[in-house]
Image (cartoon, rainbow, N blue to C red; front, side, top):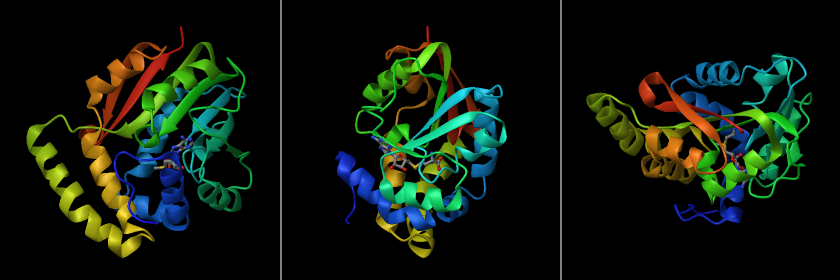
Length: 230
Ligand SMILES: C[S@@+](CC[C@H](N)C(=O)[O-])C[C@H]1O[C@@H](n2cnc3c(N)ncnc32)[C@H](O)[C@@H]1O
């Protein structure tokens, strides 16, 4: 398929991920200069799942963000709407119970999870606010939300270098390693268009979540936002 514009349709987003599914994880490792593993560990620490807790990993893709939860003893449910990503995930992580579902109309009952997490997925939702409200619906009162998403480096000079990397270096590198380089031009543009840490905390606080707070990773390239279901 061609390139998805920033005003993306759900079927375009799903098709874009179907296209990159096979090489998704290796491309991520290269483009993030190997940082993804550390970011995923930080997500598990932030959720702090107790053994047996039910954790929804939304927009789980190939399950790479879900696997550390299983390893920590949580009852993790990876959910995504790209059948291509789910297929690759099922083959690579047969121990995970993948569920096909749309983040905007989750196939789960109210208050059925102890925690919900979404890594590098909220930015891709056609309506992130509606997605956050839907996540609040399926989380029990007192349950936790952890969002892991690209954000804005706090230190000006680093931010400048990073934006240069995103706009200039990332597309050619993606062309060399990915099956659909256009998807990574979209990645760079969607990161630039995404709210900063404070803006995302405000959005989370307006969608049924209490006490949003955040923590920067890798100087703010990524931020973890946490909140609790009142
Ligand atoms: C960048 S991948 C992240 C995958 C995984 N969480 C990770 O950290 O590697 C984003 C995922 O969001 C999924 N996605 C986008 N919109 C969605 C929606 N409305 N419902 C479910 N999944 C969605 C895509 O299919 C894709 O697999």
